[in-house]
Image (cartoon, rainbow, N blue to C red; front, side, top):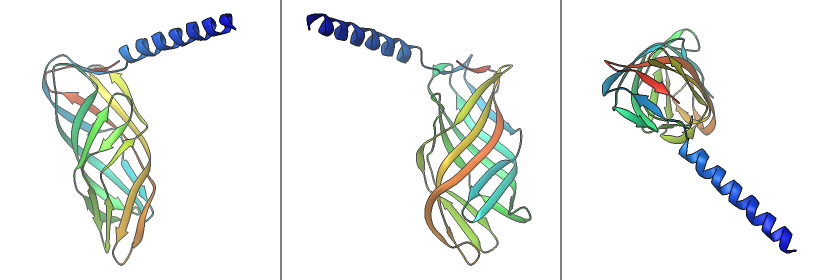
Length: 184
């Protein structure tokens, strides 16, 4: 019995050390110096809601990369050239994202998508995953594959109650002016 207890204590110690080592080596964003964040779309940014699909082809971003390493980046993205259901033009308010090095993402303010007879609201929400960060010659490629997005629709063409089956997909390249960004 003592041998089993001793083995159990030893296993717990090894697991605790492993957990400490894993938390100490958690991935971070790195910037060689402070710089304004700039982004460009590498493909369409696509929102799928119960009301339908909204595809935006152009984006601009604002934010600041601080010198050094950290686990978060705050980024404001303005999408434009948006179409609802492939042919109806629409507009979208800026998306304020908190990017986390864990791959999760928070939407820190509500987003409104407006098109002919329809207003879709995406409330602020946290823990949205899966975001992959890929190093690309001093810049980061951000590959969004977000699921479980909560939204609701109002208007004659898209009235629906709040539900959480929406998705967001799209790739963008993020750079910091005068600095190199990386993720490791």
